[in-house]
Image 1: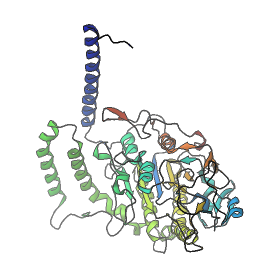
Image 2 (image 1 turned 135 degrees about the vertical axis):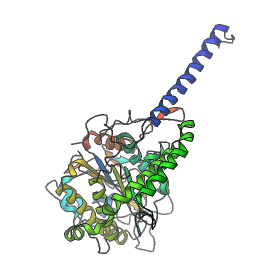
Image 3 (image 1 turned 30 degrees about the vertical axis):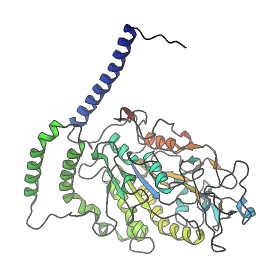
Length: 470
């Protein structure tokens, strides 16, 4: 051990190095602040880091954790093991350790669909016709067994909330192709998912990039029509005055993006009063399209409206649309619960894919279907025969269509009971890197300086899953 005190030269050298680092950090922060304030149109279209396979993304979030074992990943072994005590020995662990547990077989029949012979539950009657456009991925894993933290991780890359959503990162990197509409639109259910609106937050990115949630009931956007007697000229004059009054504050605090974002939102709301009513009016669609999606019919009406609106939004240049359907948290009565949930979304999703393909949009639109985690092959027995499944972060099925993915393929695999991914296994960060890659963005270059360092969607880097890309 060296007990000698540092020399005067060593001390000054170290001090200079430390101050140099601080100065560099401040310089970078100032440059970033200037860059952020340089554009009055933060959502203007931008070039990606390399040629994109997809121009837009529709993200179908099945909140609650759909069971891969009962949808797209059949496990015949469970029929042999049904009602046998779950083996906790060795490496196999229950996702939710409590009480006596048993293996549970799937109550659903499976078949091989399409030319690709994809495995799919027969309950997906209409989606079965679209499997040759779909890439099923069985190798994804997440870190959390709890709904809010798992939802955050799937949506933002972080389990703890406060980070930007993947839709926010996408619009930050690419902007939007329609300045009259938000670049990132969210179509939630009446009850928000676990974690609430933080699932589509802008996080530490400028506030312009937050998701705009449309109301699931009534008018999708409040105050879409101006008050009686107010004409566009009045609104334009009010906005010009407001911008003038706030300019001094904006000049003094250029890094405070909330005020600029609010003004931008006011401007966008003004323009949306012209464009949005026509866009949101689904009655303008031909009756055959409404019937194909299941609009006006039960149990498909609510999700069908969201799917049809998603197609109209990307058609009008919105960059990222996320919609929610839940809850798939079937701890018991999974035969009844999952059957009902599949019936609600099967027809609308199949119609969305067919509609995108028919209009030529599927080639340039990435469609993603997922939950926050998968489900376990075991469960406690509730009510005698109320079989269900618990949470499973180690195995899940995610599928993608369009936008440059390998349609008509199944990538990865889980073990014989569906407890854990065993082939082409990747953490969710690699899935995020892959989604960005398909949209023409490099996760290592799509960064933002915050909290003293550059941050990115994958948190600390990942790799694209090449097997998913066509």
